[in-house]
Image (cartoon, rainbow over all chains, first blue to last red; front, side, top):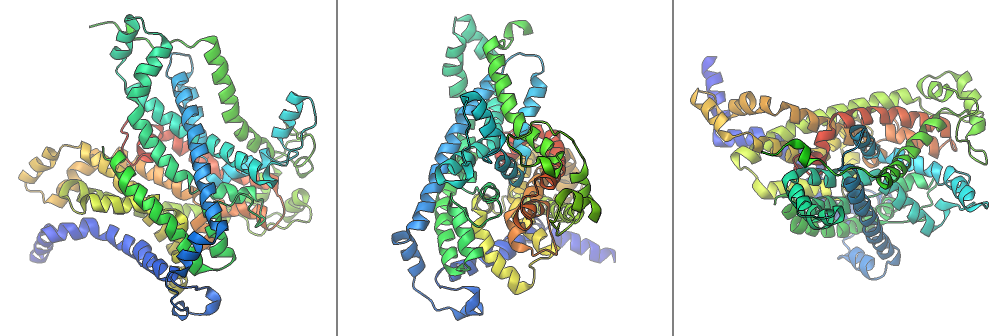
Amino acid sequence: MNGVINKLTKALNSKRGISLVLMGPAQFLIFFIAIIPFALEIYLSFTPWSPTMGDLFSAPFNYGMNYVKLLTQDTRYLLALGRTVLFTVVAVTVQLLLGILLAALVDRDFPGSNIVFVILLIPMMFMPVVVGLVFYMIFQSGGPLNHVLSIILQQNITIDWLTNEFTLFIAAVIADTWHWTPFMFLIALCGMRAISPNIIDAARTLGASEWQIFRKIKLPMIRNVLLIAVTIRALESTKIFDELVMFAGGRLNYLYENVSIWTYIMNAVQNQIGYASAGALIVLVIIAVLTFNVILKVLSR
Amino acid sequence: MRGRSSLEKTKMGPFGYLLLAIILVLVIFPIYWLIITSLKPKSEWIVTPPLWLPRSPTFLNYLVILTETTAGVEYVLGSYVVFKPAVKAFIDSAIVAGIGTILAIIVGVLAAFAVSRHNIGGNSFLGLVLMLRMAPPMVAIIPLTVFYSLLGFIDTYHGLILAYATFTMPYAVWIIKSFIDEVPRELEDSARLDGLSPLAAHFKVTLPLIKGGVLATALFIWILNWSEYLFALMLTRGKVITLPVQITAYQTYAGMLYGPQAALAILAVIPLVIFGTMIRRYLARGLTFGAIRR
């Protein structure tokens, strides 16, 4: 019995044993839940398959027609791509600026700064569905936002925020900004607190103003951590889905159709699995190029 | 050496306080609105102008989602029917998010040791798992739904658990690797001299040193799993029902059940805020895959 255990221990601690024990489970999960379905998706993207056609291999190979159609004719898809990029650019820019502002504000001496810090982080912990729900209520035509606007502007404001594309976009940006500015704030604050107080002190002794200290010392010194935050947020914000579903209020009427919503409709509502796969894989290629060329480098600097 | 007093931070001016106050109001207002909505009886859900404080606050909304007292349901919801009691959603979310997190952490710790200590996989493995996380979940969910239907995994606990473990494991690998990297290899080397095998050295020397970090990573991943919506939406049909799906259900089938919906949202978010606040020192590290380490 002891011999068996000894042998087993020895086998486990051989090079292949270690590799199997440590890496095996991860490889199994990735292979089973990600690689096999991914291969399936590539296959499906070259067919017009939908569940009504019967089993998986009943659809004919269509020589990449899905991709050609998506990229050259499908304006709905291309518009969805454009909306996704627009949303990311606007939302991440707003969040970055607000995050830096907040960090510069909180990186000071004032009573209760610890509690303020904790409160400012809370939105980040909310689940996206609940963020969607809260802002769905706030943006109702009879909701609190219009009420406040009515009081400020001294006239009856009844904007139906969630029923046209432009105001829906604004609403989504505001909801996402509430949700994720804390992340930018957190990263910027981490960066500022890592700056040696001696540097700030030296600048102050030399007569630098607070604005100069912020502009010439703090901002350049947190540039690298902000770069990490911006790349991660930029990729994450392309995925926004839960909030948009909540904004539709249970109807399948998505006025701001980004790529996530487009894929969801194609896949789960219209059951065009092959076509949806192709549309999703185009996005994946874009994200993969970004991940390997930008994010991996930014993260492992 | 200079005194601490000369290194004081900038003082907050009146303008700073004003700005901070405005921002705090904007941050807190949506939370406040959710809370008061959860305390409003049905007659106050939709009134113009909206009520900034409930006229007759009630806990009936909470009672309705937590119990199945039909009388309460009828009182609050009128003719509406609540399809599933929310207690099941809590239990299912706890099972799926809990086990999914534990699985992701176990697999992630092992793989992190492989990458950090043995150079197995290396950058291509790290890139691959990062890709798993960065890829839009939409890409993953289309074929996973098809694949799961073939396997009969749709609407099962193990199906959702495996999906959650796989797609949060990248965080576990990256973050825990960053913790392992901070422990000097020499500690394991000296333990090896005392006769420990490489694997035993990992688990008996390094793992105890990073257990705080592993726990924080687990809570971080649990937060993600507890909040996940798309996978739960696509991979379940009602036998398994998680909280985010349950919250949207009040919106989908039964008209607008603002009160119970807000009440369930509050209850679902409370553990997130508690755990999130507990691990706030690790949030930056978690969300940046261990790249920012303070």
